[in-house]
Length: 106
Image 1 (spheres, rainbow, N blue to C red):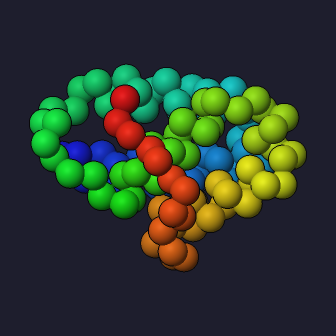
Image 2: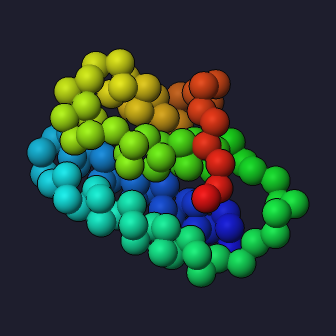
């Protein structure tokens, strides 16, 4: 269940964030996605001893960044966009694991 959740939500996260950068998804939808994801996460049964996958760590990292930074920073900060693009590429099955991702479960 945990892996399925991360796989599904990671694909959605990539869609929403890339859409935001392409101006086809408004910032308000990113915010709704964030809160909906946390609500859905609260329904997932898992144990604290279940290990993280690299994909899950990157997923939680990007989700946190999405919520932490302002709309303007997410849209216009080149270094943040580069970092997040690297993460999205990894979530989509390409690239390498971004070593600076420290995502943890809420």
